[in-house]
Image 1 (cartoon, one colour):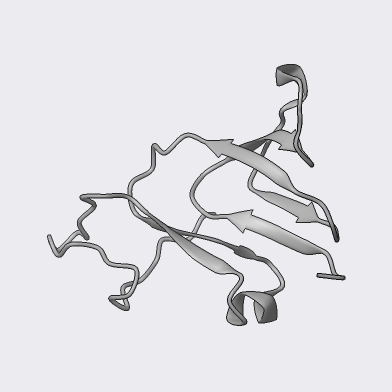
Image 2 (cartoon, rainbow, N blue to C red; image 1 turned 60 degrees about the horizontal axis):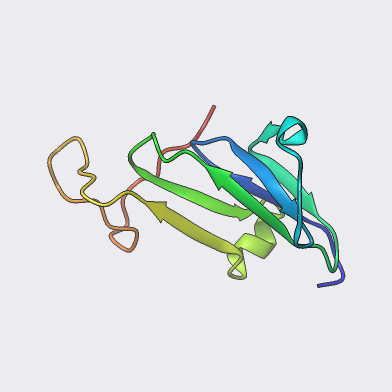
Length: 98
């Protein structure tokens, strides 16, 4: 779009491994949990999936998230503390980061 989207990942840190299809040297791959994406930019990110739960990746402009710029990151086999299987559509509380 024509606006900046600060994309945020809950519960994890990620590193940017490519910008606009160009690899980022490993020594320049900073750990982040939010990155501003400007019009026309693309980023490839990697994160270690080591924090089981249901987490959100979304635009931090919350009206953009409300409009659909939001996706759950769901760990397979994750159960809620009461033993109920987790489901992103089940209306369960999603863990928030600090």
